[in-house]
Length: 327
Image (cartoon, rainbow, N blue to C red):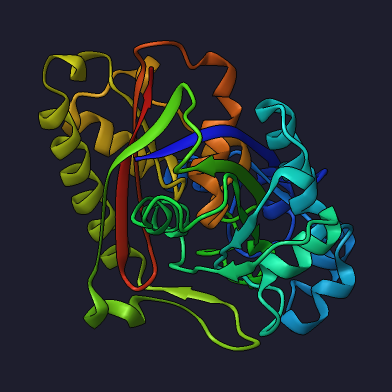
């Protein structure tokens, strides 16, 4: 078990609409995008002029075209989490980061975020692609009590638009940028906890989703979607069985890959529309930050007795799930 004390999120201001993508003249009109992935808009830390003029042909130029740095954006999400937790950066005893799109090889991104927040604490990265958030929590939950500080900051910074080839119509509509931050503890109780962690991998399929060094995002879309639907469906059914009668009101947060995939899982698992929490329609696929951002956006809605199943998948191929319980 791991206690959640506060959670926050941040999206950059620049909006990539379906009309913007259609005007890139790459064969993706607005109707085609909605029919294929069900995404209407997404946020980016890139200049829209940069995308329009270069299609992000050379990903090494993306950071120079960014309107906000990853540490600054991460700090915005963290400050929301601190406010909700009624804590300050000085209360944090460890910072853990993880991302599909790390900004540099070294140091650990957690160190750059801690520096931005003026936190003096151990810093380490744990990465498992889009399933990173749940895997980070599972590792922390498995630590012996007393081996961790009172409060740990878990951050997931994602600038996925920096890895998108905007001349590729199969990829351009999918991704957005987002940043999540959560304050957790395995020592100090709170009214919200993460329980029942599970994570697994299918390493033989690692080549199905790849971002090569200085390269663009590339995937075998059909294979990855089949894997995602199968593993997320199995995860939700497992949680439903474990919850028993409480499963009737089970909320669901999935990996925000695309709306059609999520809707298919809901249909297979009997998740009602009102119990499906998502943001992919308005923000696109924001990698490892997607699911925690959805939880953050619905944080004020959480009430005593709520159960929220979180099931995510990622490159590797990896999958992970946990249950958010409100006491």
